Amino acid sequence: MDDKLETQHGGIVRTDKSKKEINLVFTGHEFAEGGELVRRVLRKHDARAAFFFTGDFYRNEEFSPLITSLKNEDHYLGAHSDKHILYCSWEKRDSLLVSEQEFKEDLIANYREMERFGVGKTDAPYFMPPFEWYNDTISAWTRQLGFLLVNFTPGTYSNADWTHPELGDQYLSSDTIYARILRYEASDPNGLNGFLLLTHIGTDPRRTDKFYNRLDDLMTELKKKGYRFTRLHDTIILKH
Image 1 (cartoon, rainbow, N blue to C red):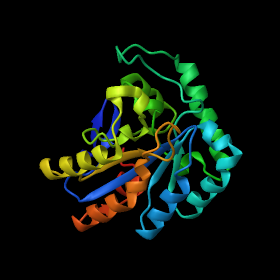
Image 2: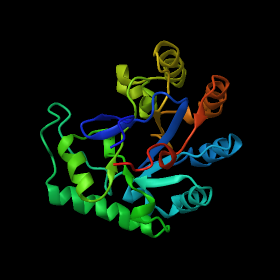
Image 3: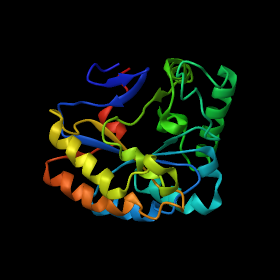
């Protein structure tokens, strides 16, 4: 694997830290109410992103027009598991909650749904695990199926945009998330270079403060700082 790629537990979590390139990644399972806004903002900035959807998401007929539009606009469409199942314990990461057969059958089912949109396995070599939680075994099983596991780059808490006020201290407002992203960018020697910056294409209705409403502002600010938004296909290029 390319030595410029940063990995954790066998999954790629960052691309080349020497380049001011950011990979915008979005996941989706139950919700997609921000999809059209996200698509418009990306088009405005002439940027391509990666979208990792579950089989349930691909099966949802309400989401079909969005999926088709994203594909037609040359965004990456990938897998996020078929049924959004938890692979390993939150408390003890090495403790698997699924068998190898269950894992592989679930992921293959996800790709089967993607094929209905003209997305084949060779079109989507990167897979993002549900809950963004996995271990070395899950990464190895992913490689056995011919795919590479990727995950978000930790540090900014951008992925907390799914939280809602009922979660108490776990909840982060969009202002807080936005500020944390820019604070990390300013404080880390490598900024956001090579980041897989994860947010969600839709969130629980109990969260009314939707972070995707800040996407345009965020992209504008980061472009001022010299960043380009790139696709995983163009930064990883499967050198493994």
